[in-house]
Length: 414
Image 1 (cartoon, helix red, strand yellow):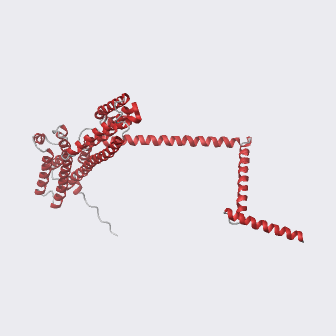
Image 2 (cartoon, one colour):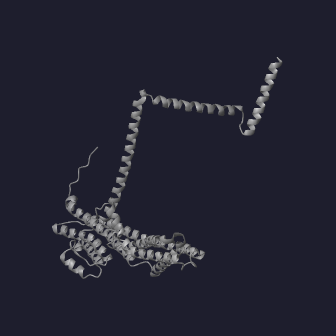
Image 3 (cartoon, helix red, strand yellow):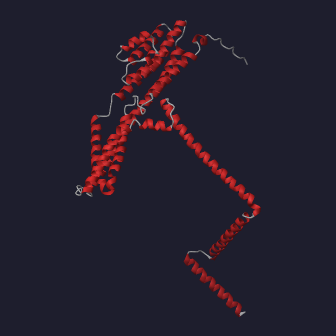
């Protein structure tokens, strides 16, 4: 019995000592420790089971399974590659279609990039080359020791940082202002498309026809509406009326337009006069006349908005300040770069100047969006779409008198 008591006391003492030690180590009780040990053993057993399973899978009886698994992985890889290629081709097609919608031209990606880049690079490249040559000259003078009193001067570095911050802010303001003008012009021309559709449709539906002469007069008056948008395009481009307007008006009207001071306003006057004559001849009621006149007034308002963009350029003092700051930056920046770059100063200076000058040139390109450049608004494409919509209305719309005189269907009785 004494031996049993000794064993029991020794076990209790061992348990208490172990409990104290484990509590000091951060473990709550012996059960946690046992779980930790058993989980480790179970993890080892699971790893051994996985190894045994891999060995079993590599036996000759499972070679077919491995082959099937390999073939499935290859199919998955090929399907992923095909999916990536399809996504790339879809992105490429969207890029081309976006330019097609924008300009109406069928061009592939490289042609689009070269077309857009061709508007900026020719005007920027000579100045960037001049800055690169100046950078090489600074590196040469530094090599001969003429710039030892400047190279490494902290004030030069501080000046470059200040010029860089100021130049970045001015260029950001310039590009944002130019983009606002561009986007405002696009919104106005989008509104023009909607107003032309509504006015043409209103003239065709509201005005009654009594004979074939009324039908022809109405068709000629409807064609004055797309003629207004085409003449507005030429007015914004400071061009004279040409065959585009001649195909939409009569010969007598075209002769008068050639001598008009403001061709779009002359066309708007003719459209308004036709609406007034229809009202006097009781082909329109007062509410229909008001609706059509409001659409005509909206067209004139859109013309005034485009003229506001055209005749309100960026202030000249801002352009002078930006150019002066660009020149100062291009003069000072190679002096701060030559200490760390050496002979590569010319190349880096040319690259930096090319970036800054390109940003400035992009702002100059899009601030007047009514020209013929690829970066300008696609006014030719928009006017062609307007003319096509009006011609579809004239050619495909049924006779209004036949629609009005259709017999009514008898009412169904319950």
